Amino acid sequence: MIDFSLTEEQRVCRKLVRDFAQKEIVPIAPDLDQEQRHSPEIVKKFFEIGLLHYAVPEEYGGAGLGSLEGCLFSEELGAACAGIAACLGGNILGLTPLLIAGSPELKEELLTKHASGPNLGAFCLTEADAGSDVASMRSTARREGDEYVINGTKHFITNGGVASLYSVFAKEDPEPGYKGISAFMVPADTPGVKHGKKEDKMGQRTTDTSEVIFEDVHIPARFRLGQGRDGFKIALMTLDGSRAGVGAAAVGIARAAMEAAVDNLVEPGDRVIVGVNGVFGTRLVDICGQRVQERREERPHVVRAEVCDRLEPRRTIDGRRVCPRHGGVAHDLPDRGVALNHIDFLLDGVLHVIRIARAGHGHAVRAALV
Image (cartoon, rainbow, N blue to C red; front, side, top):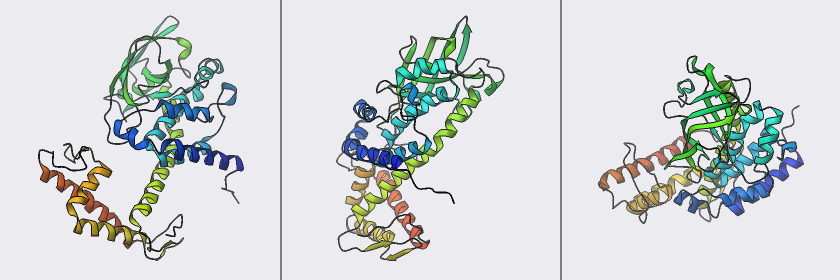
């Protein structure tokens, strides 16, 4: 029978990251999110506990840990702040092409330096007209003697404006579509590397997400990864390896949301016992639905303001701006009625989810007794 229990080392590592996240990230995450500010201090502290470069082999200065440990870290970081989880996870994402397809000599040259400090990596694949359709990318890599010259602009790059090392995908041959793509490593201090627009995002605002511009960037030919023209394969292998970590971060976010719901909606005297195959006593979803409905009926304008203030939706469905922080009130909007209708839409969505949960069968993964 397969044993899915964690090793003692894995439990220790998980506790280390959980303690770090709750002590160092949680207290400052709201301010960082509001200001849309990257925190090099958090990156430095994560490096100091030895886990910033956890997936880098020990011979190159990393911790030499695997995907399971990475998922444990992602869950704890996601529970504290999704944006910081994306930032720290983005470092490993940016280094993975080098780990997969770099020569031992190139790893020694680039990884050892990178892993020696609180440096971040970034994965440069997406372009304005080449998101899921990678074959449409326009970035080019032209061979000139013992160098490659890279030109192009990458969009929506996690850690784009703060990374020290980029994995970059560009076409050596524009004709065969994705078969002409190669992968390269580009240090951020290489002449011609520039930072463009920083995205103003609805979520994960503590992560620097920016354009990265390459204008006649000359790199040594040895900085090309793999055999050449196999960049699409390297990109897919990299993304495949990152999926579990993204899911683990989502688990952390969901866990934090559940804990926040219990803390904010369950009042003293409410008895909630969640069982393995159902819910006994008073259902948590019943309590949540009752509290939301009571607040909506008794204090409709206050509830709307609370939603503005806490959830802080940035845009309406039709793209217009809603609820910028102004005391949590929507009175400064051009059309206040439109704004309140959208807040009512959000509240209706909350109640709809609660009704679905109430009608279904509970299969809880943890128990809560309040």
